[in-house]
Length: 233
Image: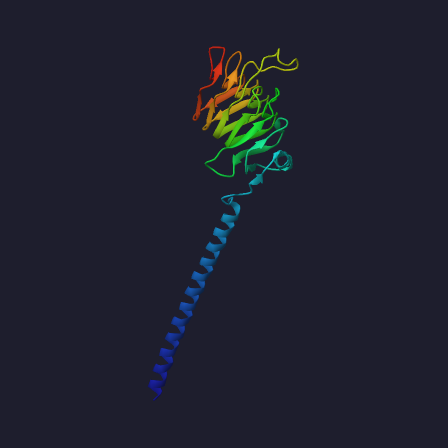
């Protein structure tokens, strides 16, 4: 009887140890799983969602307000075509991406014409064109003017239907060189995608007139017109 009692106690001890070991293993697995889940959630929160922090705009006022209020790199999505009444200025310390709400449809940012640019990138400003069409409502008006210290990146979309003008057209300014994009001395333009086409400059360089830095590794510049020898760039 004593032997049996000792044997039963021994077996009970083994079962208890196995149970404790199993519990420890399960708790360890649960803890690791929880930590992995927290890590995934943390990384997910760090990464932008598919729509990210993008701001959707429907008109000029909403677009200008979104740019002025931006405190970091900001993506602005056009929900439809927007016609401007004055040049859209990307000021100092603003990093703005302009794209369309519908990826395969390039909504238009339409300049006011009347010898005005559609987009002006000021010193210290950065703009990415990533899926819109920059054009003009009238014949006289260039697409994008990158001033000294400004930066323009084009990855997608179009710059088309813009028209430089002669100094004789208006006394205070003239863009007889450049129709689609004018890169001033000290300005920077990098093109990796998109299309610059069907723009016009009276003297030369209907597509891109570069006096600063212009790098092209993708996209196309074609079908622009000028009275000079360099219709595209």
